[in-house]
Length: 389
Image (cartoon, rainbow, N blue to C red; front, side):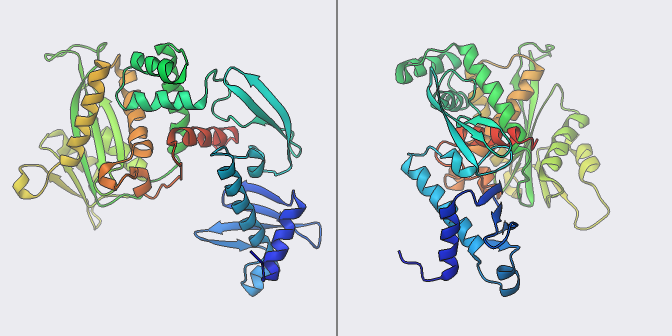
């Protein structure tokens, strides 16, 4: 395709020179000046790009530096497609400083195959293209299959059998559980940075769960799992495990939801008739300012208030816990609740949301692609490596 715009041609010339663009973040780049020894900052704001150069600043046109960024991003996308979904790390630049002055340093051979090694000539950082899976003895595909099957309710031993039959990989069930704990902790530190855009109605409900090594009650060894969900986005704002259903326990789930929503308050909070909700609601949501959050206590379906949304979630969790035959202790129960919340919000497509995840509906669109597990793990590892959390 011919380029008639002279600024587009100059942008293409910048790409042709190589090492002219330094990636700082996915929405921020620094492009070398073509007339002096300086550089210009190019930043994406919404769907538009801005540049510090006089051509864009005073004429309000798309300058050659912005065109160079467009060409660079389009070129990178074509490289991804041609490599069957394997991103070319050199096109993104160094994991630490973002420099595009990166060279390849051969391959490292291990049980999972060949791994490309790189070195940044700006900061001297060495890295490979298997971020997030650096010390794994199996492929990222096998690990993400195991994670997905675990959260879909398959037992650990059946996961091991699946990997042996279809991937030719022999692992033990403690190894699978180790993967779950390791990668959930990694991803949680990353996704907790984002704030969902929620609606004006929240639903809260509690359910009894079996925790084997907890103090026995009159009904056996049980704790309570509290869940609070947004109505429109189905985003699970809070999951808390407590030993009782007192006011302080109900306050925990309200407090976590407020923290995740980051200042957003609902118009209504729908709960059942548990008395602990009354005092907990007043302590967490009561204010003299308008508009005030109202407490809608479920009495009967005819009144138009129901908790079907969160009760359906509880049914899904019961199915998963049945396979696990309960949880081990209080601490592991809380970790499982948080892990399942991450899976529900960012990985699992929701039928009521036309196959999208609650995070996507809540304006947290990370564009994870087909293998959401692998993309989220890699992105979390890159942010950790850059010291962003």
